[in-house]
Length: 147
Image (cartoon, rainbow, N blue to C red):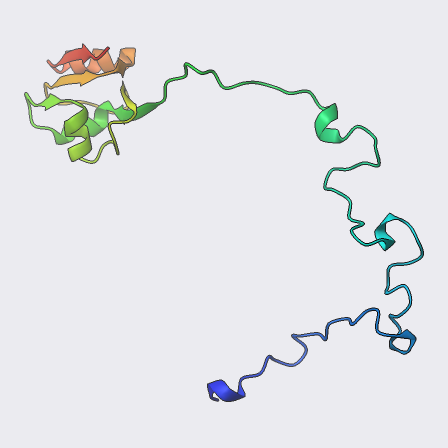
């Protein structure tokens, strides 16, 4: 087998239907479009969602919900992930990025209480859950909220 004699396998391709090429072809005269009507005309396509002038479904249904303009998205870090730091270390946005716990400083950082913390750390973030605060303080660390 070489590139110059490659063929599609038998039965995998069909000949295209040549419409409007005379009555002998079996697809002449109306060219498989039937008689008259919108679909028989040139440019006679119907837009998606058009229901013949009836109010379309997407306009009959009510609009729901909205996105608040003052919504703040947070990069989430759990207390258990902070165990990679040595005791007494300062944990801030820059150190979280360098250690790969968050991707960029674009989002605000929120510390959640999932996991255990075995060392005292000085942690500064935009938000803390109550359980995260409790675990950090119980381990001898300090919590600083960035405003």
